[in-house]
Image (cartoon, rainbow over all chains, first blue to last red):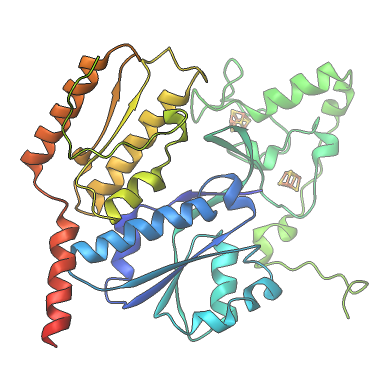
Amino acid sequence: MIVADKKPIEEIVQEIEDVKSLLIAGCNECVTVCEAGGKKEVGILASALRMYYLNKGKDVKVDEVTLERQCDHEYLEEIRDMVERYDAIVSIACGVGIQFVAEQYPKMRVYPGVDTCFMGATEKRGLWVERCQGCGQCVLAKTGTVCPITRCAKRIMNGPCGGSTKGMCEISQEIECAWQLIIDRLAALGRLDEYEKLFPIKDWSTDRAGGPRKVVREDLQQ
Amino acid sequence: MRLQYPTNINIIRVPCTGKVDIIHILRAFEKGADGVYAVGCLEGDCHFNTGNLRARKRVEQAAKILDTIGIGGQRVQMRNLSSGEGPLFVEYAKEMVELIRELGPNPLKKAKAEIKKRENAA
Ligand code: SF4
Ligand code: SF4
């Protein structure tokens, strides 16, 4: 899922000091799971903002809505009738959702209420970890299912580098060396012979190096 | 034991302080409460293991929000006692009333009144 973190309220209010009405829009998907942008967080942010404005002597209407998804036109369409009633929208979906709201409603002022961080998983409640950077050409088959693009600070394909020490990465004592993990996993699988094979040069054009990306599936398009 | 505790405290019963969420605390302030405190069982004694610990964290988070928006985080507190400690309950209640007296009323009440006054004048 996409992992996001709450933006400090101080930062959010800077952009919306002047509004008379505001819609806080949450999303029922990833950001609900990572407790940054679901219905519950919408309620908390809206309540905090209502009190913030009131305390400054301002009469600002702050309403709440949580969509099934913000990264889909059809769900965004559901709020068409209500958006016009507001001066601005604070979206607490991931960065994708926030931009899609703005694309759907080009005349609306739309602001982010979260910091979108990465694609990851819930290690435990309150701890989310990055696992994939969407490189566009998955190499997990060759690396014991540990992603070197995401988990190696240098994104090297034939590791480890000289900085790997006692299983930890040279950039931090708290980050495991991805290549140590790869070797350990391959060893556990009895497939260390895979490790002996040199990785060819990776085609980075499917990663960010090729600019913004698209997946086109003509078989699905109408 | 028939003990008298301050009458300006409104008790809201919950099955466990773990039920208390940030939004409940914030809503109380939105509705004009001058202070909120959660009274849970002693730490380590929660029937549901961690309810009172969660409550403490939520109280802390609510306090942070209230500080940020200028209402004052001190107005929300967490207290722990065992169910047999009636006198301590009274003591906590008195302490809380004392604290709120020092801090003064919820500033939102004044702000609301001023907005209303402005509206009536216009
Ligand atoms: S190799 Fe690429 S697609 Fe596969 S997990 Fe890593 S970043 Fe994601
Ligand atoms: S120590 Fe390991 S994870 Fe860190 S940069 Fe080197 S190979 Fe990558």
